[in-house]
Image (cartoon, rainbow, N blue to C red; front, side, top):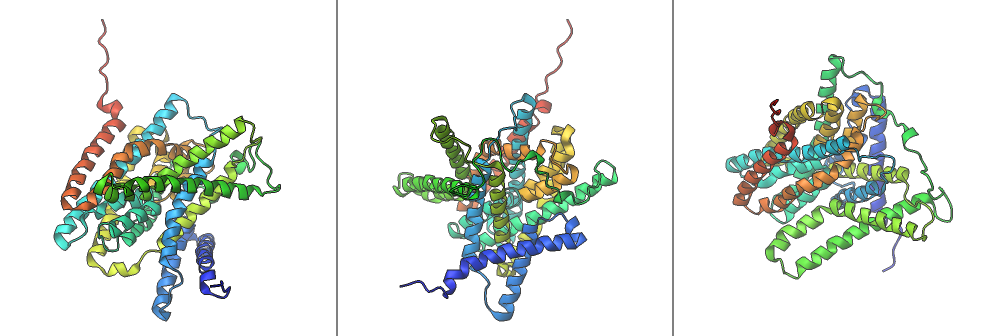
Length: 474
């Protein structure tokens, strides 16, 4: 059947994209015009997501029609994370040397802090949802979505909520995860504002008018040394987008290969119930790996003389990643199913878990930064809390209130710590696929999370716990 240009299906994706991008522009305009919104430090993508959610709710109630297909929004949330990670990984690390011993140790401690906070959030979440299971039949493993929503963001919150829903029967699991991620972004702004006001009153942090709007390109040139020209037979932006999609399809092939092994049945139910949702759910980890592989291939081509110039552009790849992450955030919030809030256990658990998630994450980040990063205490708190309760955008916005031009290396530490966080967080990832299988498994996971949390803190506070006694004078 021939395609008819007036068919709504031809235009539906473009309409959805226009809505997402349009509400972000509207939200950005409102932030600039309305001082309380600007002072709230809420990212435009987060505000735009809530605006679109309310607009969709109103139109559905008044006219009984939907502006978009939720499956499209969920797909954009899922793929936005993977594509964004590929783009940010394709940027080079030249000019940002982190080989000094102190910096390596700080980056290591940032990674351990991130994992330790994930574990603390998981323990808190499980205490709440296991308790509510006995009171009102709440899905007991739902508490594990707290670190996915607050710590990992909307991409992972949706991925795991979807797995809990479709594989293990957690009703409205996708919306639960997405709501946690949305409220995490709000919590990041609220907690960050509380911290900033607390230390501004003490004179430690100075006011910077519109600090979150500052964008100093002097340290991030539009065109790096020996890069391809902006425009030739193929536009430079086209090449950057092509590299991102090639890297992401390499990710798909890796996950498809793992799935092919699962399909052989050699791993039994463990393969179907744990490995499959893990591999497809953590697309961003594979995306990081394949992007590094693509970078290595490009370097080999250049070394072999097949390529004469640098094909990846740090500036453009950073812009692509920013676009993908903004798109992911606004789509994830708009995809929340408000009908799920009619379920009592859903609403009660969210209120408790979001509130306590904010308080405990704030307290723990403050506790750690004061003791582990004393020389960059405030910068570290703003960046870590922003990431662990909101999004990367929240972290950068909060950090700029303290360090407007990002002259401290803290912003880079947030990205470099991912390797250590992935390494130490792997046992937690495995438990994410084990816990929802039943109440017994949830209790076992709860105990394992406590043990891992203790271990991570022993590593983090190693200099205090294993402090050597000074040698006695002879």
